[in-house]
Length: 112
Image (cartoon, rainbow, N blue to C red; front, side, top):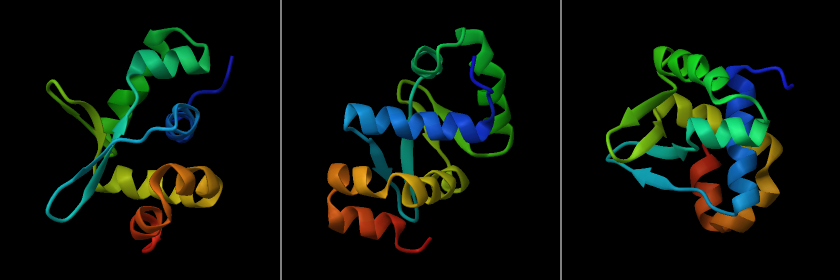
């Protein structure tokens, strides 16, 4: 069983996006929000029971990394987006550049 942590969940979220070749972004006036996989999808991907993931989502909400939006799902906050984009830039740049295109990838990761 994998060791669970907030960092591991962010990494798993990115790997899911890479595997599925899809990332959902929401742009607001001053920020970008990234849709996070559901707790069930992360649990399935990490091969752990669903209830193992739930406390980490509560911690991520407490640390203001994610927010839950009714009928939308889980989205990163500004802080969570920065964390995710830094991980993408450091470990998944090639894959995400292919998915997003060079221009969007550069615009998103340029300031980190």
